[in-house]
Amino acid sequence: MNLLLYQASFDQCVEKVIFFSCSIMYPGGDRPLKETDLDLNDGIYPAYLGAGWTKVYLEKMCDFYSRQGRTKFVVIRHSNTYGPYDKYDLERSHMFGANITKVMTAKDSDEITVWGTGQEKRDLVYISDVVDFVELAMAKQSQENFDLVNVGCGEALSVNDIISKIILASGKNLSLTHNIAGPTIPVSIVLDITRAKNVYGWRPKVSLDTGIAKTIDWYRKNLL
Image 1 (cartoon, helix red, strand yellow):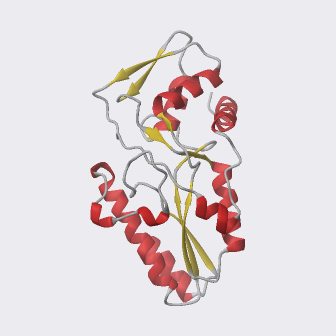
Image 2 (cartoon, helix red, strand yellow):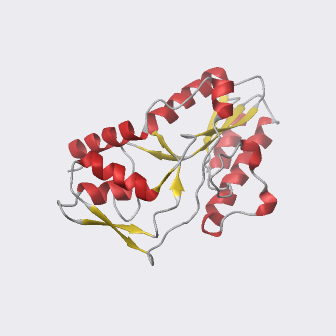
């Protein structure tokens, strides 16, 4: 599907294409990672193998098509995006959406079950901040026909800390318990967002506490 979009953009001389990649091809660690820190010779974390290599391939094809015609391509390697209209059913949702649902459907004094130890860290970026970057990328891309940019918070919190913030914002009295045998991906990825700041003048505006509060307010109005 993506390649057909690239080809159609080339055929019709579309001015610009924005491709939403992600950060799952990066190696884990606590150090913020620049766009140039990816060494594909090191491989991709096994749980991300299929999706990670697919994203890398599509990024490379953006670069390829940018050399064939006048269409410009911007690849966004975004971190974990959250906020209203995310997936919140427990069958399809990611870590943030799943735990919002667990907290919001729990009763006071219930336990929230965390899969794994909860020590792995996540870099979370609110949806409106991602939209802001897209608008800047459309307006400010350099003369180069291809660009690749990290878009995230630039710091990360443990899953335990994130869920604790959700519980606090909900106003409920809940505790955490851990299912060590539950499925989890114990990789911490933090993005260095210096390029997004320096080249596009972008920085995240919505703090995690504010983003959680906005998400819970939307959830109450739309899903409860």
